[in-house]
Image 1 (cartoon, helix red, strand yellow):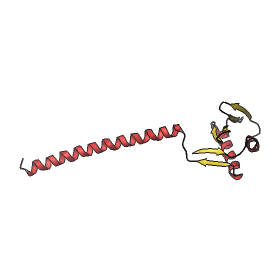
Image 2: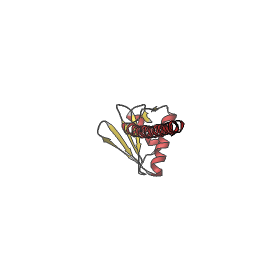
Image 3: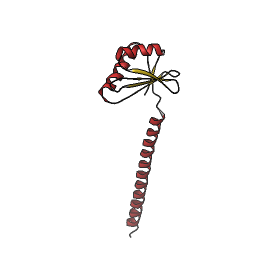
Image 4: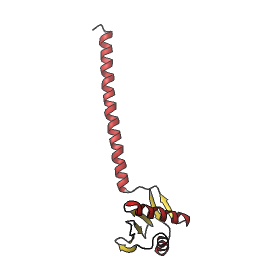
Length: 128
C-alpha cells in the first residue's frame, strides 16, 4: 500500500515536529524532502505526488511512523492507495509465475498418470 500526505511542506513540517522535534530535514533529488530522527526513523516526502515513504529500523523508527500516521489520519491529511510499487509488482509476478509453473507440472503428472491407468485398464479388459 502506498501512502501520501495531503498538504504543503509547511504543514508536513508542523506535524512532524509534533511527533519528533530532535531530527533534521534535508533536500534530496527529484523534489524529495527527507526527515531523519535521532532514533533511526526516516520519512521521505515527494512534493509533486505527495507520496510518503517511511524507512529505518528498530523501535524508534516504528514508533515514529505509527505516531506520524496517527497525526496525519487525525488531521485528514493521509491518503492511502492500493497501487503497488514496481518492486512489489515484480515480487507478486514472480510468485504467480511459480504457482502457475507448479500447477502446470502437477497437471502434466496427473495427465500422465491418467493415461497410464487408462492403458492398464484397456490391457486388462482386452485379456492381456
